[in-house]
Length: 68
Image (tube, rainbow, N blue to C red; front, side, top):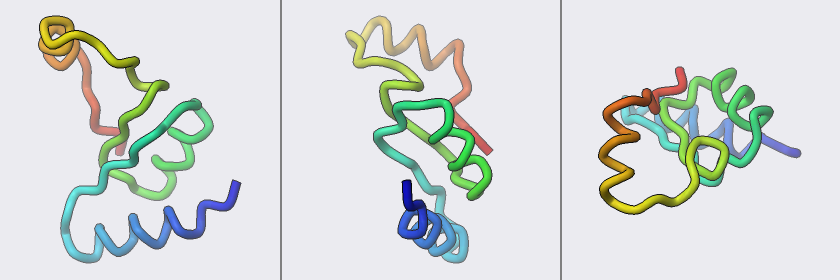
């Protein structure tokens, strides 16, 4: 997969001092690449599948979503 556009967006976000969220992360390999690129946060099926609101509260209280 070509990550050049992803890297450019992450670099731009970091240069502007804003936190960057990668959406659609589906594999461990994608997560590792995002970590290497200094991406701040990730979301997607690899992190957690869609859940009901009560389960969501439980998840965010027990998990860290920061990836860098």
